[in-house]
Amino acid sequence: MHLLGECMKIKFFCPRWGAEHIAWSRFLQTVKQAGYAGIEWFPYAEIGDYIEVVKLLEENELDFTIVMAVIERIDDFTDYLKEFEKQLLHLSQIQTSQKRPLHITAQTGREFYTEQQVDECLLVCRKITQTTGIPIYQETHRNKWAYAAHVVHRQLQKHPDLELTLDVSHWFCVSESYLQDQQVAVDLAIKHAKHIHARIGHTQGPQVWEPASDEYAEALNEHLKIWDKWIITMKHRRSSFCTITPEFGPPPYLVFANRHGTPFDEQFRLNLWMKNLLEKRYTNY
Image (tube, rainbow, N blue to C red):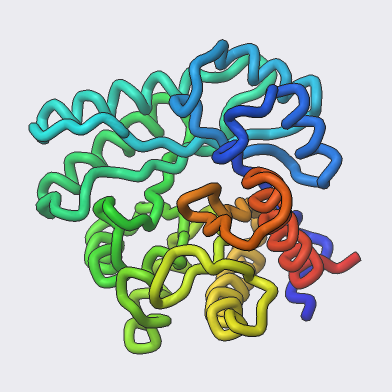
């Protein structure tokens, strides 16, 4: 099935998540050889010289996006908001004169935040984007404000400029359904999505054991329906490119029982399978 002409390029990004133990030079060579356009990176997952990493990305002619969350437990909302802004500002400065993040994906707030608190978080993101020029997308993610389709739907109606990193695997898991009865919310989210996290979840979990298995054919198909609509939406906007991160995760996302190789080998295999499937589906050669 081919949905695109030559006018829009798809850039696939390989997650650094799960590969933090691998030397950057080796990791980036592996990513490059696999045909990715770049990496998706959570800098605070590892200690190091962030600018040196950007220079290595330059040398390997790879782009990068950043994903972030405030991982420290902060019970007071005012303190959280200050830390959230501080981290976003710092992450936006991880760049050189030649390369900067294409965008930052923010796992914002918590699922129990009030609507007013969510609004304050979104205002911080908006101000930093205006100041730095780096887009900040809200990831649809369990445990965060954007944990469910109906919640995001309300905010999208309220904030028409809101942009998403759409990871529908979380919503399927939270809802214990494929959202057949929430299509209005899903369709609006597709219109606001600027980046896709391509992981296959199902009604009982955010990541299937093996996406190529017949056992998970329904789950795969339900994701593809949504991604197909998104690709068509991006094409109609005449976007020059769109970005996708195949995002199967390491243990405990990855159930490692009865597998061969290392956890990284298996995670990388699943993400490469996802990339190749979508590349074949959406790109005319």
